[in-house]
Image 1 (tube, rainbow, N blue to C red):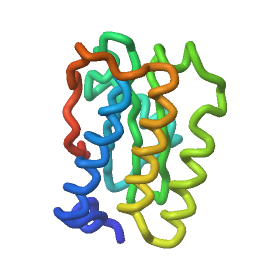
Image 2: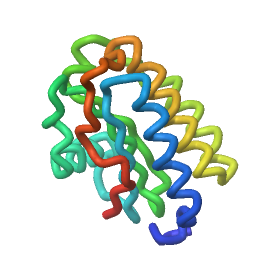
Image 3: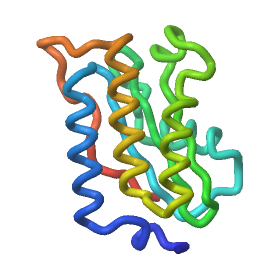
Length: 145
């Protein structure tokens, strides 16, 4: 599979968007997914570039998270903004990445993303619990490049 369009069906994309909504109900953190064909730099570096391109650093608490996937390159990364990185350790996302990688190895991309999203939401709520005045600061739609 080398095309972004073939990575997920429309129904799978909708399930992922719904998972983002569920995860964000427990936290003020914001989660986005970005999928593109391939990259030529380290996946974390590319995730950081996309993060800035999507203006994800504009959240009030600087608590946005991007899950980046390069389909043809078979790479992915999770990047959290400054507000998260100031509160958590360097290995904060490792268990989430491990769960996702196990699904991806088996070709179960939708479930890998959903589990990653829900785990990210669980981890975020510890440091950024949902507040009654929270608003959805970023789109839940999947970004594609």
